[in-house]
Length: 170
Image 1 (cartoon, rainbow, N blue to C red):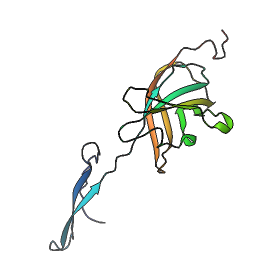
Image 2 (cartoon, rainbow, N blue to C red):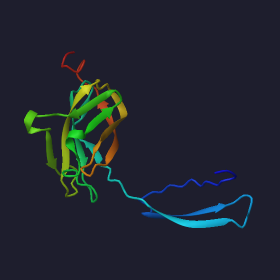
Image 3 (cartoon, one colour):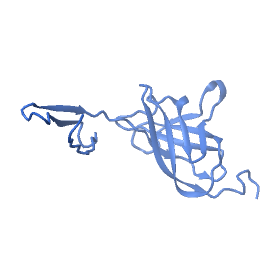
């Protein structure tokens, strides 16, 4: 494409509108009679992004964390996630679902936030790094849904003071 072009930046946000109409106009720069215009409809699919809730305080030096993945009207945390694919990260600390061997990951199903829907509570164990005391740290949950879609969800957490070096020593 040569010649002048006009680009308009706009958000195609599902929460405000599920479809958007764009007008695309093309003109030949040498012959003004050669012009065409089309209306293009774009349909935006909402991506179910799991909500997160830390169910136990995280202390500096902790080796495991329990995390509730919240269900809502569009997302069922008990059936829509591939639990084995879940990864939790905060800075250099990486965690994977804690396993009970052949019994699989340590999970429970309970209504954590009182909305009448079962939520998934997963226990994660630290696979690398170490939690250090800090406030307003961003924790990221990544994984895949049973339909094959990938997702990332974020939450802010505080890492509380631990005991000594995190191994119970002072």
